[in-house]
Image (cartoon, rainbow, N blue to C red; front, side, top):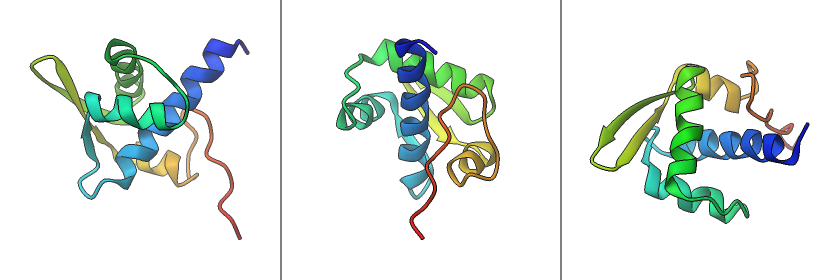
Length: 99
């Protein structure tokens, strides 16, 4: 697996986890850029838009556009991935919870 592929898969997990932490499961792409930067992934909004598009194609999020930002809402499938109940191709599997 290339470094870029690993980076994308990890970023997708971070995006899903960030959405799952929200009460309504929704964030805009500007806030999601900040979320991935917290984990050392320094990418701009268009790159995040591409990763959100991938997650939408996989059924993990629903997207809508407001001007130049995308607003993502996690789906049941996305939450199930974060909870380790299913595995979504192209998204890093979450680590085991501490026992």
